Image (tube, rainbow, N blue to C red; front, side, top):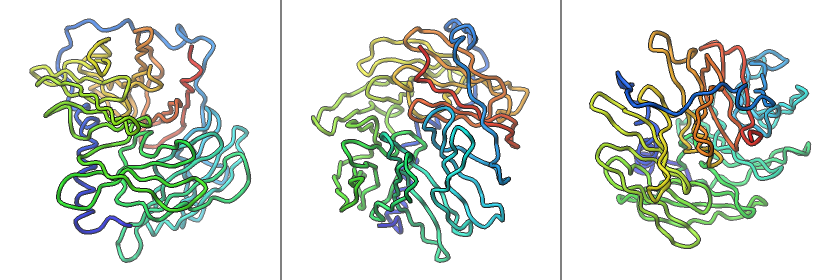
Length: 368
């Protein structure tokens, strides 16, 4: 099923609602930040035995390379145009630099490879294209990253999928791939869809309201936190947790942590973390900081934030920081970062501004 007509409009509306938490975190910075923040340390001081890995910004055959998922800090999946510029390739780039092509789609079809998720050696993703008729099409694919076998198409029955650049856009659990889609109809509703990694029919479960998938089996309400409480729903137990937000707070939650943007009179005042029940509140950063990724407290521990010099462009002069909720300290990871992403415990970022000269990856799972 493809998103067209009323369903397409509902998809856009739901996507906007899901994005609300992340967009609101990027409000203009406050002009002052009088409250003291956590102690700031350098990466070398805190983790002297760890070091980010640098990845070349182009493939051996020339085209620019953009990593979209990491298996470890040295092994990644990413996209690159073909040398002749006619196709967009999805490739697996090994630690030794060897490149294995997974998929190839014509650039004329405006292809996107999105929603990456992995369980063991099984990697899954979505492919979105727009043909000559202008109708968008989405398919789900999978491959075994440890073998040399070809990628397999799982299904074209995706519904009106919603992608928010979260590591939970698609989730693998017990041999099935799960994703959220906007349900048809006038009233807001969300389809929780799944398909077996071995293939087969798509299962659809409809939940009333706008929801996004979080760490399985949890859903998080979309668009809440500014005008009402955030809701967390357990799909297996039918358990619901309600997280209150005051009029001066914008809240985004995972099942274990909530990010709270506390507003000041002239803009964002500070970013805090708290547990969904309101306990364990910690100050992360002041109003000049921005949450760098939509997911809250990666690995239930690290909040990824950036600081941009107001005199320079944010694309090449961001300071990349990790707030460690376990030890309640802030660590400077890099200077001059550009694009920042994080999936499955791997944090990566670009340097070089709009003309990316290198990528850098850090396995947060190795930080003790």
